Image 1 (tube, rainbow, N blue to C red):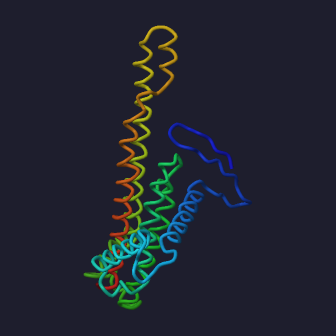
Image 2 (image 1 turned 120 degrees about the vertical axis):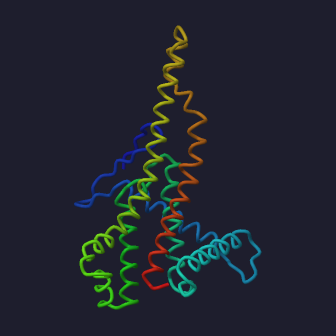
Length: 250
């Protein structure tokens, strides 16, 4: 694995393993999952009936918060199913993958295939709940409602669900990345132009240092790398819960 520094981020050059291409997004995603597993292990270590440690309080607050979201968006009966850990894991993975850009690597959520993979899993769960709720016949019949001529539009609408979830999440993450890159480039050019006005060797030396890049990108990072990451993870999970709850008839 070769590491190359390019601008504000690190590029990972990962070789192929036989016929399998191990992409940067895959590597970073596995690293994020490992960090999340270790974090969960830390928060839940030596738990007690009455919490005496802050990490157990934080863990219980997280679980309670996810249970509340599932109850409100999907229905009370989903709280006792496996959807609470699923939604919690999906939220943590989405937010963690987006925040990984803080460390100078490519955020896996800026890779379309990553978000599409999550959306396909959600689409399978939506379809499963529709079939479970109305049976195969009811699921197929729903494409012909309210009238048979609406079948093509209903099919397009069904396929559009995972695609809309994918491009909504992907577009917001990538737009932040593009804006940040443009700001970095603009501030570097501004530093070169302004400091280059200083005569002599001092100006030549200072113009090569992107001084104006210090400060503003860090402030913007608070939004694009943190607030936006959690917001997009929340929106993706909310859509997941609404679609699955609606498919189940709740």
